[in-house]
Amino acid sequence: MPDNVILIANGDLRLAANQKCWPAQARAEEAVMGAIRSLGRAVERGHACDAAKGHGFIDSQKRGMEVFRGIPPEAPLVVVEAVWQYSHHILHGLYSHRGPILTVANWSGEWPGLVGMLNLNASMTKAGVAYSSLWSADFTDEFFLSGLRRWLAGEPVVHDTSHVRPLSACKLPPRAEETGARLAAELRRNKAILGVFDEGCMGMYNAVIPDELLHPTGVFKERLSQSALYAEMLATGGDEARQVRAWLDRKGVQFATGSDPETELTDGQILEQCKMYIAALRIADDFGCATIGIQYQQGLKDLAPASDLAEGLLNNVDRPPVRARGNGRVLYENDALPHFNEVDECAGLDALVTNRIWKALGYPPETTLHDVRYGESYAVNGAEEFVWVFEISGAVPPEHFIGGYAGAVSERQPPMYFRLGGGSLKGISKPGEIVWSRVFVDRGVLKADIGRAKVVELPREETERRWRITTPQWPIMHAVTYGITRDQMMARHKSNHVQVAYAPDADAANLALATKAAMFREMGLDVSVCGSAHGL
Image 1 (cartoon, rainbow, N blue to C red):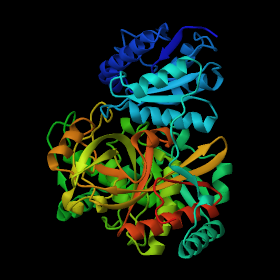
Image 2 (image 1 turned 120 degrees about the vertical axis):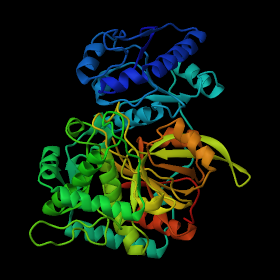
Image 3 (image 1 turned 30 degrees about the vertical axis):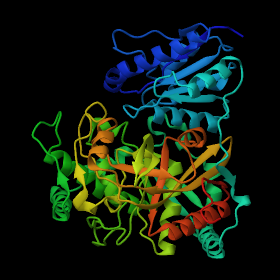
Image 4 (image 1 turned 60 degrees about the vertical axis):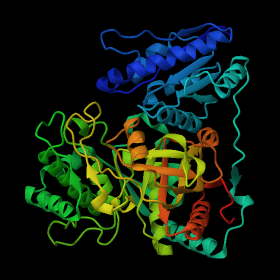
């Protein structure tokens, strides 16, 4: 085996994002290489920086293949991530790499490497690629150095996952067993359609469920096109869009508008987003979709403003009414149309199941995914807790916010991601009890992890600080996972995304968790319960 460690950096597809994020990546790489050298090993970059582009990332699958042709197949390989990255840029090379693989992220919410690493890890888990993983704030702490030392010695880095129990080790309440089994049987018998507006967003291989794994659950994909969504937007009248905007104004949503479309949110961008909301509902109804996902980040980004405002509205039961063409029927009346951000099909299946269980139990069914973005310890009611920052660009329903619609603000999406603008649906998630979950694919098996958490309200200045060090335009949730440490969550979680839904109280949340676990099991998923016992 070659002695030199090879380091690579995978990045975004978008040039502006790679250029803006490069300084943070360069600092992280320098620190990781310094740590490797301090342990007596030589390390070199597997690809040069591109002076013309102004960054040193692998920025396409084509470039990734060029890089891997020059990397010795047996070399120890470190993938350092301080940014969001497109996993498919390098997944091909990781498939066939025979040397040990280590993924490393900086513990920072800035761009963020944590999210990128979790996505890459989940993609490799789905692909059956062996890897080790580490994370650190400055790459000098003993947790990181001891793990790095083991990996350099040829040992895999094994983390504590004692918080994970198979569902077979748990005893579910009879009501949960009955409700879960009934809903799963109904889904298999009646079937449901998961509408996907262009599969495979941002290289998220982990977010695509193979048809042969999805179909036994009773769910089938309708592969839709973003071009059809855009065409339906063009066919939507301005008066209808203005009615949606007026409805939101009456509800108290604050739109932080300006006049410069290059850097500010404009009224014109908002009306285009309202048209997208209308168009999505009409297409979903035409095809009979029970849940939909809009890819957006590629394709439509050069044609239309961001989809995020539309996504959050779709996930809310109380939302602007939209009527079908012709007969004037209100679409999905008195119900949410669950939307899965970034066409993450694992989140889509989860959202569909959540919607049906929560309605069966009589709970508000609003649900969303979030990025597992960042976290720090904080004194909550006098006790030190690790408080996660769950944060996502879109899909969060106003029902989750303190103050509902009146607590929501729409701010322009960052230009480096969204050239044509569009507003987010930003708010602070209300305190309460939640169930979190993640559906994922592991070597040809459809699995689900499920657990409990509480959402806490932090002082406004702390919330603002956390927004500043992540993405201040996006909705935020302050979550404390029950019975799971920071490192256990990072070690086990097989996605950059986590699904969340509120329950009225702790007992109700425990019942919802048990019912969801039962339904997943009856659908054929391999279910694990994570964290504290939750009454099971």
